Image (cartoon, rainbow, N blue to C red):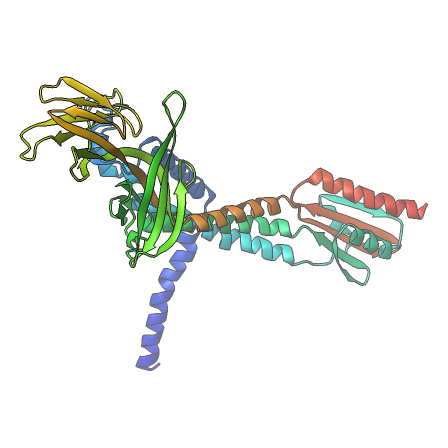
Length: 454
């Protein structure tokens, strides 16, 4: 043996050893049903934790709601949540690893069990001896030689018949054997969609004043490849934000008129959104989730219209209020405080000492500190939640195939053998489900054969 052949043999053995180890040790372990069930339970458990524990919130939220003393359930604190990644369960390395391992288990099961079962179901052989029918779940013997009529009866009941001389093999419902494979494939597609969405998706929140334009920047939760989805070649303009109120003065619905514009300001898409009616563009969805007061536009005497920012006040959970300070002298030595609770309600004005001086509405004027103060407009701002999950179409495709696979699995794979020998007709069969229905069908075929004899 030459040195070159020895080296080639060494490389072959070097590759063969791990391959054999994988086929004999790793593959059977991955295909074990118990492992698949355990992984599925783990996915369900951590998915529940991702539903119960708020996801993608700032650190201060978890510190306030999951304090160390007392710890929830005696162990669940904000530190545990942050360290384990329970604040973004679906994007943690360990949750994605479980999904990949579960997918590997399904793949191994498909190739080691489902495909061989399908291959075996597609193969057939004829029974040439009467004793072969004794091992079948259903068998019968008739004193007749009319195998041609039996073939016709089987074909009328949608069996695919294979015949060789005086022997018959018939089957139907092979689609039922394909069902489990389609189910496994659909689950793999769902897992792939979930992983792709977790890696490339993101969620952002923006509070934008009416009339302003913004790009998606305030991202609160994102996968490592989210930059693939966050585009920079277009922006969003809030054309107008408004609120509809009920007769009692309560908020009925709030709306945002949004436009997608390119870098040159050309409008690409426009839609008015409200709660449960979002705007979708290039796989990114804009939801109407919140609102605020951004600014107030006022005029002092005959001055130009001034726009002053408003800030939300801390009311200790007793409602929402916004306030600002309006100067009434050019040197800012005097001014008044203005308080508002919504876009259309009464605005309250206080002097420097905190004394109520006036109440006004939009469009009205009042006298304060020797000047005429006119409220031109209260400018609202829209609260938008922006989401992108490129894995959703893949997940929907997987669920569609899953439903199809479940329906396919309900079809029974039925097989019938027949042998005509020495004036006797031997018939038998088996099925993988719906045994009673199969036996009734076989008895009906036998009854027709017997009625022809009589």
